[in-house]
Length: 506
Image (cartoon, rainbow, N blue to C red; front, side):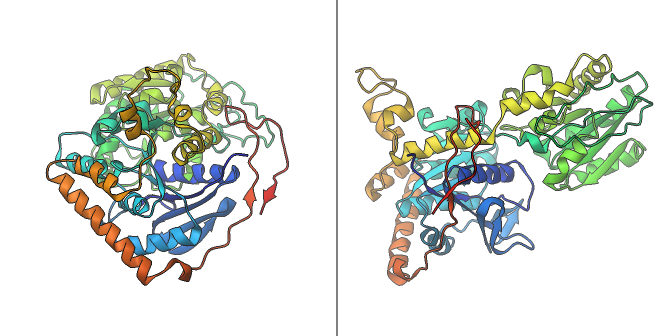
């Protein structure tokens, strides 16, 4: 029988805030619970969300009251999070700590404290960073500090893996690529459209196991093409590029309109552009929307425009394709890995090319060259959160010793010539908890940074000893667990081999 684990997912970014990282943590956690594991989430308090909350499927969320300084990231203190973190870990009997996102302070601190406590750690990177600007240099140095002593790293795309390996000076063999996924059932296209005029009326999809989506009516030369944009309105999401491109797209294509959902500091630039060009009747600004409303906005359109300047994966374009939208996106980061070419039109992250690519997409839809009604079923077969959970579970098995190092890293231990030397295998394999070994790894992070990192680790270890003396483990109440689900039998694609009633084991 496969081993089960008590897992703590830790990040500054979680619900009720919408976003790709937030959705990833929630969906992965629920699927791991379905496979018999215990999962909790530790994040900071949000307005109206403090203390302990229970979500669907028995997922427990700890909202820790810490100061938030920028874009939902907490103030870095290094050590002040340790006492409450230790208390939660002991109460929940956690044995694997899984941190998410490079810019999450909670994630970096939790991995440091977890290693001090003798716990296995995993880090998932969801973003791309450069190497030249000051912010990226500081972030990369922090990432190198954290990942010097992590057991394994997961990236959401191959481009993201290459970026993370370079930023943190990692052995590529200790980094796995496990992409995001989408719950296709939550992003169904509309069943059909009316056959008259440019105003479309829609009906809800029938409630049966295999919905049928009839072919969409070809767009006529005078039918309105609706372009949808759903994004945080920040510079890195390409909002400046979008602001410059919208007037030109609307000028080149008179029967076109935009629906924009999202919020951020760049929203004022979009509003000023709309006023200056008198586009109030052709550009609709919805403001911030909840994740459960994304599908209802997407199905109002024909094209999804994604002008991001940097993106490790881009879950929202998968959601758009699942809703039956033709995707126009910038060819940056891991985006080219996400969808096949027949679902997308790629553009350089430049104004002229984005305008031209959008024009090609509009022309292809009007000429009925793209069968968007088939996108949903294709996306449903490509992406599955159950498959993501199975692959993540294999990482847990590898770092905990449930499977051999040879099986985990994929080499033949009987041969004399392996893909990497024995010395490197020791670096890539399960990390030692011995303090001297940890200090050796941190010391190699730089002439000055290495010494500072070693000092942080020593102080963290001394704080851990003090906490063990002042607040002994036997004084901490142990939480009762929810009844665990019996793991379902699945094939390699994460699909159930046969339908069974849900069983529980105490």
